[in-house]
Image (cartoon, rainbow, N blue to C red):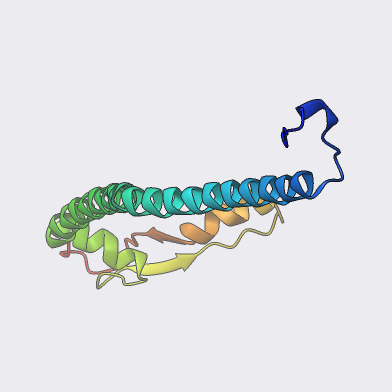
Length: 145
């Protein structure tokens, strides 16, 4: 007596068929979970590996910014040194003193105001508002340089 049945006669509703289907779902879920875990590990490793490159990029950007600022300060320093040398000279000291409103003994200061109302010419006059005219009424023997 043969207890073996051919495969074609196997009913899909049989207990053997019902047990196969949950195994397929379990295997698919396990594979999906494993793939998600593998991707998570890959992302974490890539973040660890990329951290030094990001740090290097940020430092290079910072160095470039500081280098630009250093060059700007060097340029400003050289301009200030030139101005210091200029103001230390007699001519430069006189010109800077006149800009501050000082006059030499025997001179008179005259302020000319712009009454035309022209905004462009009045803005130019704000920077050079004081016009100095040497007066010949001062001491005769005195020469101002």
